[in-house]
Image 1: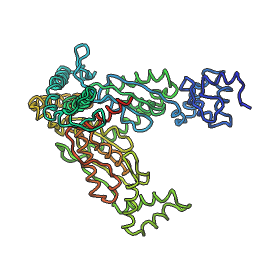
Image 2: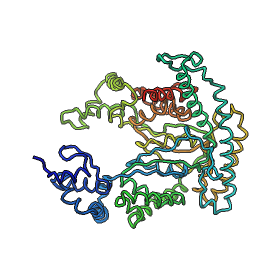
Image 3: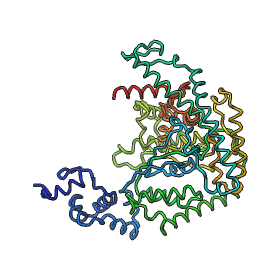
Image 4: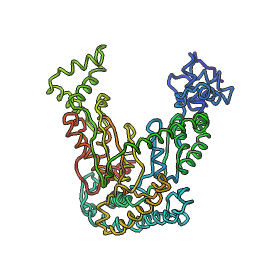
Length: 536
């Protein structure tokens, strides 16, 4: 006999995917009700659908009232994770988008690519870069605009010449494509019209990506981008509190705009972001910033480095790391034996056998998506990095690690892509960089954070990363794939070599790091994309 009457079933089907199965989707339109239902669910022996009939159906504000009570009166933050939202943010700077993407837990992002999309188009006669409010009110406004416009001018006028150069240096005739029978053939050996068009699409996409990759170094951090964000209410609330407390007017404005939009779907989850509780959090975060600045003035000594580097500055002795990892590998399958006892036994295992154990787990992996087990999280590495800002943007997408960064400046010099030299536009490139440097130095005297907006992607940027071996496996295998940008491929390869030098046994788990170099990085990836397109 069914738990519900026919009348109740009819009502429930507007809010749940089914009325008679033990697994069902919650489809009630309001996010706040979904979260409230799940929260209420944990404190009663009633079924969720019965809770909905008894408590929610008759009171349209039940979900809102529940969260007002739980979040504001009781402060149970965890329940705010039970509701989520999706927002799109368009026309924000590369400074602001990095602030948003700094949040590691509870939010997922998808940002406009500088590899597939060009920034040469104008809107109402203006290039798409942020006109920072404080700068525009200052005596630096004209210099700022001139610097950004110069960058975009040089970028725009060289897209086609750069594309022509790349295609001349590495013609379509150097590559093989599949014919109608699935056989790989040189381009001039293709006879079928569809195969020829397909080959041209692949080659054109790959060469365009390479051209834009080379020229992106000219773009300033003020360049406008778009980002989609998906996340839970708790994560959004924390993000908003941070942005409301920012010293940058753009980020404060974005915080208000984001909150206004989230209020339409998950208002209860984000209401504390700028109320008295949110302001207390903002005050706390600013106190951390001020205290850090205070001790920095006392103890941050040394020389400012130029150029780029990768340094492994902290790691554990490999024998200790191996013992911990093998202990963790054994632990889950051990019959009620504590970690310390297992580790004492592991210490006595001959080194050759330990190496075999690590190698066996490496051999189990058949592709890079087969992630090592969590036991490999027990080895940590801290890298000190100085790379161009464009490259940093790619590494910044990895969130299962600790990453701290400094303000973007012109202090560390800049990186000149080889293609810029080959095209013969070093003089224009140099003019952009030196002009940026002069404008930046003037603005930073009064507006140090705002000055970041004028700095080009080519300028070197300092940050450090602490990550475990499991995450290092994911990051370094992913960032060395053939279609990756040449800048981050080289950095990832150097990071791997440093791990290999210090941990020659454990580094065997990173079996899909690609140490090769490629001329047209996107070619094989575009081929696979085209093959998938043809199957649809």
